[in-house]
Length: 149
Image (cartoon, rainbow, N blue to C red; front, side):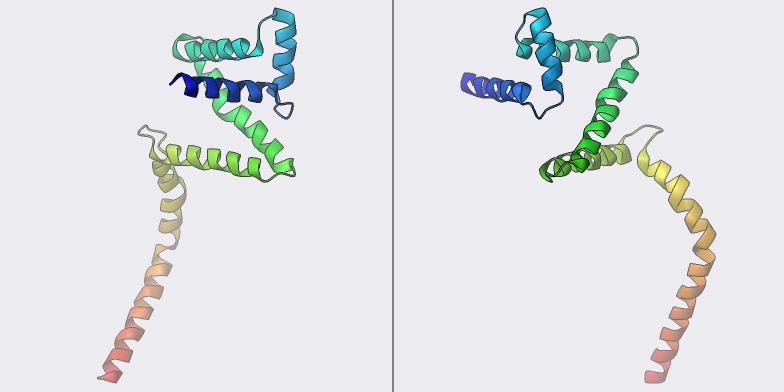
């Protein structure tokens, strides 16, 4: 168990020092200013954000920033980069988010919104035409069956 924690700490530390990540320079400045290791600054920031999301003022705003604005920003960076690995990572994020939205059991359930705003109006607008076409196909099939008998 302790080996796994050490491995996770090392991976996190490498990520916090990787110059390709946008947060590295911010953490470097904070590390110099405060005098704490950037790992502890990062973990403290995560703890504060988590507490804020549970108890804090404007928790919904923070949640939207963490869950939408930041991923949108880095998704644009991923699209513009030459590497395709980061594209896959962020596409997976958005697909997962979309699936959660479609299943979430609230009044903002994506499947209900999609049905009432897109599918139902399209169906009501075109169902007579589709029914007429299906009836013509059914009549043609019946005529073919009658001729073959």
